[in-house]
Length: 279
Image (cartoon, rainbow, N blue to C red; front, side, top):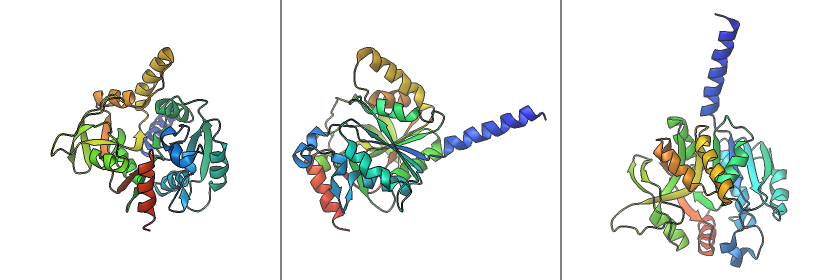
């Protein structure tokens, strides 16, 4: 066999290994957090304390516990306090070995944030952890989603029961139809971001749990959504990306086990403080 043939085989094996290994994660912290202003008084919501740690510290520790070695924290102008908080944690006990900052110059949506993080290593999968969603359980939520990714090599959306999300926030949430088979949610459809469905009596519908892994295959759908956003000047919500992946058979739903807390609203923050105070 020629030397070139050997190199091609090694390259293919290396690429396959990269598809399996999820070592990079994005923690988006660029949002304005307007719904939490009563609690934050204008400070970054990611620096709120829950159980003795800031919200962003919880996110970083979950990354490390899920074997993420490189966490990227996406911030916006005016959130420099987050940078001061997180950069000194890199490589310390319980935190990822590498923590870098990325900037989103203005609120452009989650898909835009993912695109900026993707560009740092476009051939590798990317985990996404929304810090406003906290879990308390025996196994990190992100680790559960990463396990589902390794089993399927498709993009994975972590999911929770919609009723639990409503109980945590006292708000209506987008309802995703699906059937639970083991711990996989076989997703029927994903509604548009502004669509809120009612819960049929006796049903167990689902909603996003704020944890994702995106396969390199997902970046085709991501780029299509980002191109459309440039034309329309809209924020780039992640929902159209998920809808495209679902249509292509490239999206898996993973039921996240653990106590779910949603810190995007004051009632959810109060709930998290109570849950994490119990030790």
